[in-house]
Amino acid sequence: MSNPELRWKAVFASGPFDSNICKRYPPDRDANARIGPLGPAKAFPSVGDIMSEDDKSPISARQAKGLFAEWKGAPALVLAVSGGPDSVALMWLAARWRRALSRGPRLLAVTVDHGLRAESAREARDVKRLAGALGVPHRTVRWTGVKPRSGVPAAARAARYRLLADIARQSGASHILTAHTRDDQAETLLMRLVRGSGITGLAAMARESEREGVLIARPFLDISKSQLIATLEKAKVGFADDPTNRDISFTRPRIRTVIHGLAAEGGDARNLARLASRLARANAAIEILADGAARYLALKGGATVPPLPSDHGLGNATFDAAAFAALPEEIRLRLLLRAIDRLGHEGPAELGKVEALLAILDGALQKPAVKHSPRLKQTLAGALVSLTGDRIVVEPAPPRRRAAN
Image (cartoon, rainbow, N blue to C red; front, side, top):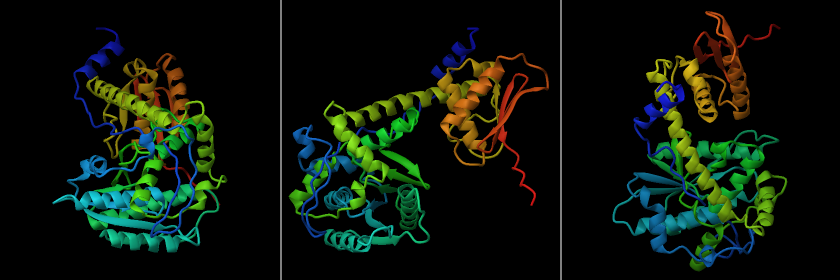
């Protein structure tokens, strides 16, 4: 087997298989708010009338048992509850599920008051009252400090997860449960599509992922918003209406209007979420191939630190140039991105910039090697990528020099 590409495939085929690379499920959206202790009925936008009866039916106790089953053994769970229909349904269903268990995780409902709307404090109090009625302990935390003038949704989201993670660690919770639905999944897919995301981004949200050092779990990714509202209707539980969900000055509400139009052509939330699920499946397979390629490069003697996602710390990654060049482009791209993200000190690298760097590296690989003379030396995201002789080296870049005053 003289072909380097065939050799790395053979090494991968004999290597270990990580079946937990990506835990992900597909996720629709519709809505109509109703009544209850959290306030009067409110109307919510619909993704269209093209949906099955299952999308409009309340979630049964048996169905809820299946939705939360994998977290039965957790010590404690933080429920992220804003007061809107999705998160109120999360708290109501989780409380009902927990009551049916003889033993199970402690539940703690947490509301983050971002202080961006006058109604937010009242909505947090309403959530606390409902949590008390359900027998679920509740905490409200506030996002304090100066708020940005632009990029408010992203900044609020980052602050929310940071605050939730802090409480999860304090309370001994292993997971934060959020109420992202199939509709949110479809919107996320389209938002990333128009931004030119790669396969990883288009896979949208995972059923379980890590953020701020805590696991984020999304039990409703295969559930439509309309089902959650139907569940609250049947239970006569009310919820809050956040008008920013309809404010088209923000990206997500504008994307929501696009889904309305796509639904008439078959591109409804169910099918968009199904696409995200299929892309997640493909992404998981490619990640396994990339792991196999990393092992091959290590066995080849070309990787001083195998560039696997779990590897961290100082040092460098060194690849045999010929073996690296024989890999498929997507695998080369992922290995380069992993090494830069692990060894760089300026945050995650942008995919487009890594693609551009890979193109330059591929071009340099076509040039004749000159001993001890670098064919390429370039920095990206705080990492230095160089090609010298028959070796590609990725290492932390020297600190930038500060301009003299």
